[in-house]
Image 1 (tube, rainbow, N blue to C red):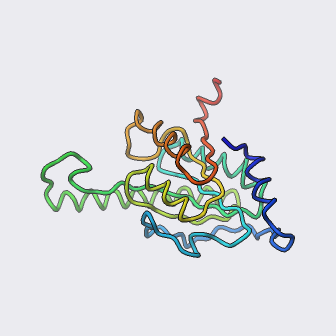
Image 2: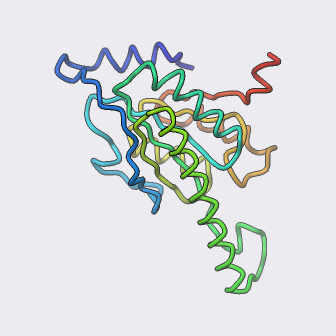
Length: 204
């Protein structure tokens, strides 16, 4: 596990003098919430050369908001040139996902609309949190199994650091969430920082 100082030192050591620029802090309102499917890459996802890219996995939970706030205060704040991507994993809506042999089309449409609205709210809240702390941020949504979709997304984005909570990655049962963070800690192709929920961290 890499420490924050090690991640920043490793990143800064790779930069040339001309690349050590401080980006003006502003929140980009035009977030890419329309969806970045797993496997989507490209220059835009990779980010500008020389800038540290911090990806924070978010959902609608309070633990997720705490994780984002912690990352902004303890990582981004001390590395002004960093770019932030708030990443939301949205589960695919189909019959198999709910263990059902048949679901009426109208019910499927209703579930998709509900899920899309929940995603919009989660991403909007995350971007608002970034704006309040004057941190530059964009958003991306991936569709599929949370651990695999996030793992693929951070690779496609060429993230320098992935930050996520130890709980609360969306519509997965709490008992399964530990394996999501564990999977990403072992398989993500960048350093992973796991932030404990505030109550749990306070009692350690």
